[in-house]
Image 1 (cartoon, rainbow, N blue to C red):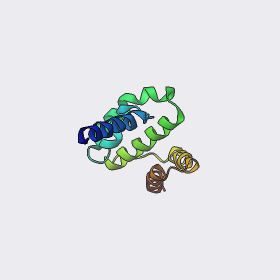
Image 2 (cartoon, one colour):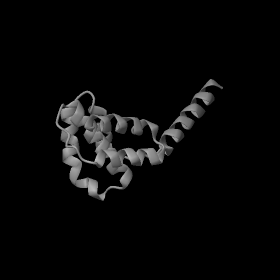
Image 3 (cartoon, rainbow, N blue to C red):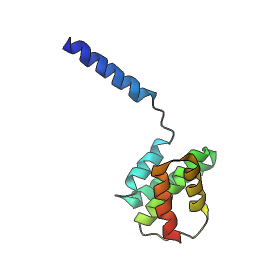
Image 4 (spheres, helix red, strand yellow):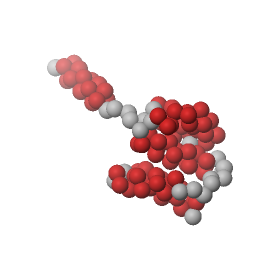
Length: 112
């Protein structure tokens, strides 16, 4: 009986994990993870994938922009005062994405 419960638990876990679709490219997720601890590495990854961003959908492009701002901030690199962070903020506000919205607010404040 214990083996059956374990087998069913494992099956459910595999099913749940396989159902979630990652909407961001793996490289972008790695760059986001590195932004706080190794921002220079994050920036290198972001720079290497910048040419692909025009082909991505809006969700990926906005997350890329947000990750780029975060990595530049953590690397103490100058961030040019442009309006793209505000479009990122508006995007996440409209989507109701509180996690990314908070980050966009933080990085938007840095520019003000």
